[in-house]
Length: 230
Image 1 (cartoon, rainbow, N blue to C red):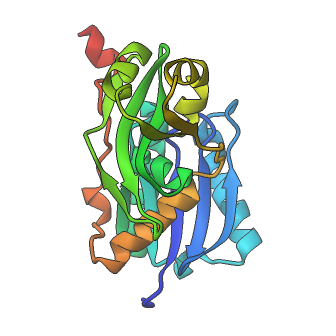
Image 2: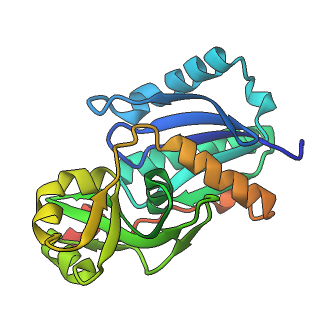
């Protein structure tokens, strides 16, 4: 295994999802999914397409990375199962990357970034981070599953916030209405979150913080709908 790994990253936490391949610090290819089609129907075909486009063989991959959640329950399970199977077959290590951490990194450097993902029923998954210019991401609080009203209660007193992710764009009107007099910004959309999953996985690889395939676990943050009905 090389000192600079070739990383295959899968992100199926959102409706569309994305995949990317990174070699060292360079992203050499990526594909975005279709939000209208289930990951189970497209993920393996998309992987084949990306490998062909980048002329990378699965055997060339040193590290498999996956967005571990929060996010779509079904999507997370598909992504985790795919990475587990590929990594176990090839005897490769894995990196489980918190989805909201990747969302914050995608937004860019900021002393306070609030990463948001839609959680269904108009609610969001939310967590705040600091993001350094060198790509280091540090959590400032714990991930939560909250309503838009609770979101503003939680972060409304902060003067400088970079709001990141699909959830920030879904809640743009609310964020802008609550921003009066504050230095709040909404980061541009980033369609391919997988390349940021890969970047964080590279940091895990460098720090020798990878895990075996069977150690991968989803980060759900909230119970599933089935569990809530019990």
